[in-house]
Amino acid sequence: MTQTTALIGAGAMGGAIGARLAATGTVLTVFDLDPARLAPLTALGAQAATSAAEAARGAQAVILSLNAPHIVDAAVFGPDGVAAGAAPGTLIIDMSSIDPAATRDLAARAALRGLHWVDSPLSGGAPKAATGNLTLMQGGEADHVARAQAVLAQVASNQTHMGPVGAGQTTKLINQILCGLNFLAVAEATALAEAAGVAADRIPAALAGGRADSAILQEYMPRFAARDYRPTGRIDNMVKDLNGAQDLARATHTPMPLTALCAEIHRLLTAQGLGDQDQAALMEFFPNPLAKEPTR
Image (cartoon, rainbow, N blue to C red):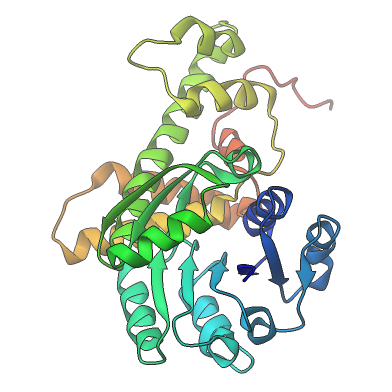
């Protein structure tokens, strides 16, 4: 029997995941509250559904790519949600980035309906999804995670089972701490290079292979220097994740002063109306010494 996968949520990230799955032969049914988001996926052969329940009906696995716990809750347990259409034994793979406690609650409620849950948040963003090179950190029962890894093999080159349900989301929070601090450090270093008259776009090559090297340095310092704000992520999504990390830190009595500063800077930019901008817009926090004085 042909294995069918459903995808709920076709925004920037879900759309990239869906496009990669459809292009590599996955039989895919897709649903999003905004029907316009489905057109690129149906053009690749995916079948559009009119509700999450319809998308889940007959699917062996349902992938969620959504933005917050209450949205995941509504998509799964709300009217015409996944649970209304999915058969017992269906695997729900939540690729959203939400907090571990909410994940455990959602998984427990799904289990009461005979549905299996794996949290599988990601790192790498839409560019890595497009090439099948996402990094996934997963929580759930071992056999459920093995099934999820098979479903996601075409979008990920690194999948790691971190423990029970919620462990993937905890690992994602740690990932976001490292990414948020690295983004901010590279932006700050870019500002210093510009102020000191050094070509910031040449620094990644100069530091390649050294201890300061990183994927964020290589990708983002040239973008920071060019003020290239093309969207691959959102500052307000980083705020959400850093909020989750701070909640976990408070719950575990873990001091995290650098994360607190990083979160405040992201909140400040969001308050200034830049929440929907890419991380490259962190440069707006720093004065640009190369900008011309305004004409008077």
